[in-house]
Length: 314
Image (cartoon, rainbow, N blue to C red; front, side, top):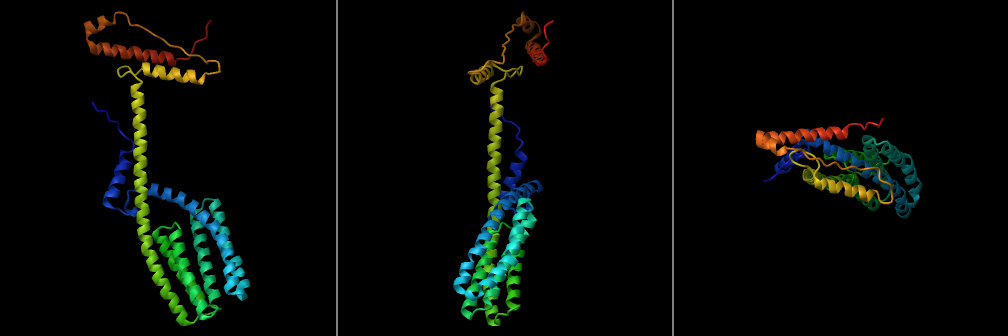
């Protein structure tokens, strides 16, 4: 005979299986499943962005070495940009991270990267054409690397990429304009690298959502198995008719007491054994159904007696 238990995970597993089978995007998932994904993403995003913000501060000032080698005459200008435009946003991001404010942290991360890209374009505007090409390419690759590493949903990533492109182009036009031909090349590089990055991002976000569904299904299966094992253990240690603990439970409980009492005084334990007189006559006279009910009533009385507070002797 097979035994099945109602599972508290049936509805969730069905929603996960349907989302996987139909290839649904996260926005089309059932509301409960979508909220769980958002909560999971929030925790992961906070941790990831906090680390990236700290790493960004290190990179921001370590990259001064590149300025010192390529444009030493602009080293002070680059330091000013970092101190006045990039670092304040990074510090705000860390403050938002400490308070668990994800929206503020995302805004600070995006803003600091845009300012860093703008700084690179501004420094490039003072160099020769070769330097402008190198810095323009560095800006485009910074856009790709940051868009792929930032844990933004696709819509937020799209807004970030457009904002980054706008800031770098605007600073390329003012206050120290870059030659139109160089600016045109910069636009082409942004379009090519940004377009490829966006396509890759779209696929990555889909893979991330499906990976979450697979992990969720595995977790539900594991928890369901643990719950079924617990129920089977409980059934194996109880009499199916009366629900009272059986000998298996007796041996398990007293084994736990003995193991926990080594080197200590026992708090106390008791075992009651009873016999129902003339019980066979009840079965023979009234039938086994009445006999079974009698046993259940006796078991309930024993449970109530055991649960009653002890009465002190007179």
